[in-house]
Amino acid sequence: QVQLVESGGGLVQTGGFLTLSCAASGCSFAFYTMGWFRQAPGKERDFVAVIRWSGNPTYYTESVKSRFTISRHNAKNTVHLQMNSLKPEDTAVYYCVVSVRPSSTSRSVADFGSWGQGTQGTVSS
Image 1 (spheres, one colour):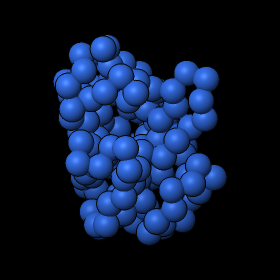
Image 2 (image 1 turned 60 degrees about the vertical axis):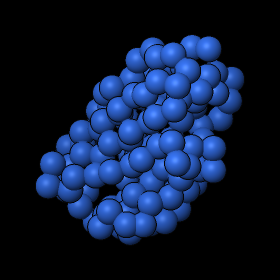
Image 3 (image 1 turned 90 degrees about the horizontal axis):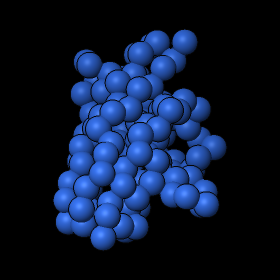
Image 4 (image 1 turned 135 degrees about the vertical axis):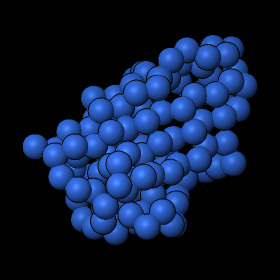
């Protein structure tokens, strides 16, 4: 059974940083795309970043480019999201995801079949 466990959320001030981590278990994700989505209160889940199995390419939603960095460690089945220069609009529950198909480049919710329980990231103004 696939299990994704996120950690690293918390409360920070504007301009601060958070480092999210996701540990995957249940099978090897070495050839699957992994990534992060987020959901703010009252809004739909939105794409944040994805990384293909090889580590390249990576894709980011426009609003986080140059501030967030996604990385992965295939041998450890982990994916990370370094979030710098945080803004109040980054406040959301962040979800770790794994793609349905290997080597996917999709940024659609429907193309990610495994989801973690989410970790809350809150940025105060």
